[in-house]
Length: 223
Image 1: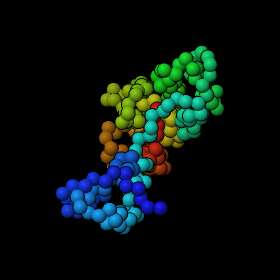
Image 2: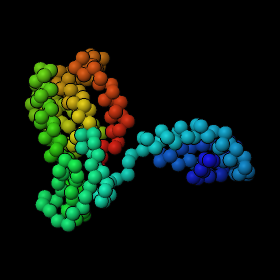
Image 3: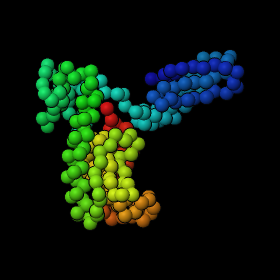
Image 4: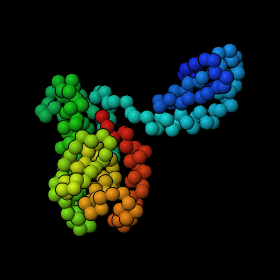
């Protein structure tokens, strides 16, 4: 099956250029008078490169925003659960361990309802895992804070307050534990030096697997 050219741009240029956009769309830039057959031959000759580059682009592209519709799935601790829209209920959003239920009247503010719910769940999960891991590995901290950070999974202040984004509760439990350990180590080592990573590795030998998981899947932990 031939590669689809999503956009063809002709100009006074003398060479052909292939550009793969963030969403995987292929743009071809070609000389003004170059025959379409020649353009097609050029594209076909670079099929392998185009396919690989498009695959990478689509993997790294941010997911489409949630629509909050019947059957749509939402993550919790690494597992996906479906959403059911119900006629009425209080509170507006509930979860029974298998299904999310959202009141129809809450649809206009569905995202806000989910954010509140995820923040509460993150506080619950972190309030159990942080003290447990701190005690296990002999760390101390001052406070726990749940944030809405988009670029950090966690952070540790100079005063010992450890913050975690609510999005983290969407990740698998072992990934949550990795981020918790990462921030606990920061209470003693305030940088990402070799010493820091060596200490993380001592406490969690498989940490690189969790770092890789976050790099590959982090963009999906969102609404």
